[in-house]
Amino acid sequence: MTDTSTAPDSSSPSGQTTHFGFQTVEEGLKQKKVAEVFSSVAQKYDIMNDMMSFGLHRLWKAFTIRLSGVREGDRVLDVAGGTADLSLAFAKRVGESGQVWLTDINHDMLSRGRDRLIDKGISLPIAQCDAEKLPFPESSFDCVTVAFGLRNMTHKDIALAEMRRVLRPGGRLLVLEFSQVCKPLSPLYDLYSFKLLPWMGEKVVGDADSYRYLAESIRRHPAQEELKTMMEKAGLAKVDYFNLSAGIVAVHRGYRI
Image (cartoon, rainbow, N blue to C red; front, side, top):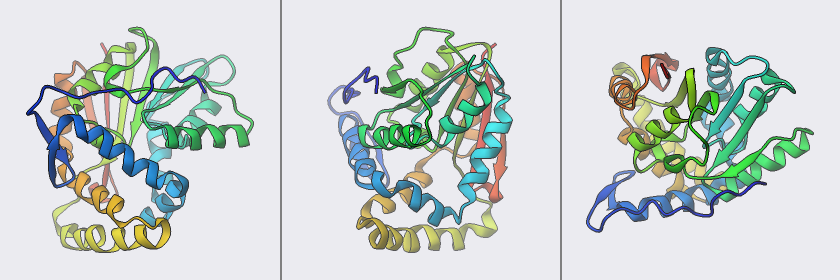
């Protein structure tokens, strides 16, 4: 593993606060608390993804990969790539003439991704790094993706600007994230999120609180139009989005012009 950073400190001036789920915490504490969540769930992260989404996360990620337009020879950056679902798929697309970087701020998640790559006989560059301080030169990649990671970042605007910075002109950023479900489904989705998810987390992982945070973090994440505006403010052009599963998740796409 190429470790380019160790537990980066994204703390901000004293007194600044942000959201950690429904809690209000000092900005400097959020990264630590998010790290504790993902270190706790890393070993059974993939099992829980299948259970929580009834396997739909595989279809959401496959749609994102198709939408990316990645082809042989491209350079791809997988931000908050965790257990390497997207990196594995992109590696097949770019071939030997291309390159995929798997990155994540969390060492435990990144270790799971590294182990999966090794098990499949795939060698990729791997870096532990903060999405708000990407250790790559400007205009390095044809495509940048972040799947189910943006909502956990303290300064989403800074992270989006960083992801745009490392894109080549004409390159695209794709953000796959939980979003705002259509209103008729809201009561049922709330019941599932706040009752069933923590119960599953307790039974499977022994950690109900981490999955309670998951449900809360989704509610705090910008809805579709708000995230589109944030991406445009970060300097991305031709931003559009695609609702999947009635808006449970959405894929946003923007270009560096």
